Length: 341
Image (tube, rainbow, N blue to C red):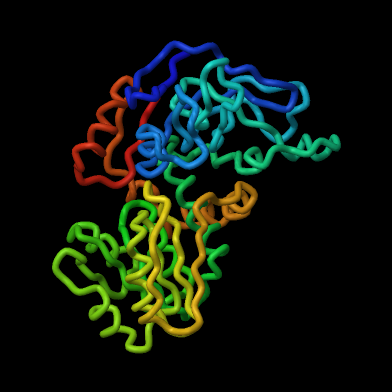
């Protein structure tokens, strides 16, 4: 089979790889799509993703595929099932796994069958879930982002009738805006430098928008919430926004960091903020928590409340995967890009 691999010198290429091996509790999955994660994928390529430092790395973690073979002890998946988030952990010797879903085949594990037999599953396997058979396998790659965002909102303690500032309106930030609106939060203030994305934020439920290129963020937020906001969220990975947020929040408010920055340090100046406040980093969602968010996301899609296609801007065949990363490098305006197999 073919996989997309990045080397330490940042070169990437499609390589021929052995088929993944699967055990009694595993299924072999033929990949149909994999979402491009501008944060994780590009930071691995550039060698700045915390925890991954042995190269070459087999990339991709937002995969959707169909079960084509199953182990003898699998009871919760059937051949033909459309499934989410496979993970190839047992990559060939000499390679590291960046979850390995830019591959023609991958693996899911039946965690509940393992539990039934007294085996403690690996956490990642709890996030591997079935999708309704009529879901579009290409746009469904966006569901992984949706689940991450919804579970992270719970971790941050977001609640109805609380005010929220969101910095960064890529697929992640816009998902936070839409889900915050669905959860009854408000006012919701969305910040970006792209007028197009600010318009999307309004469509998805933002009450106010701020163009950071030509507006003063602090004055604009304070005009809406003179006493400050309850939550200020970095959804893109701009560490300096922590200091900006300190001038946006009310007493006992929370600054939330979800976006992953290549910069692993930031000097914080709390001279102009309330005495009481909280800084909460949550950058690697629990797969158990993602699984718990799964049914809510699926229900919203089935009810027509949420449409993954609203978030997808580019779809490329696997053979053209380099075009997606060229778009990132060249700063082409985009939403979610998906690789189709």
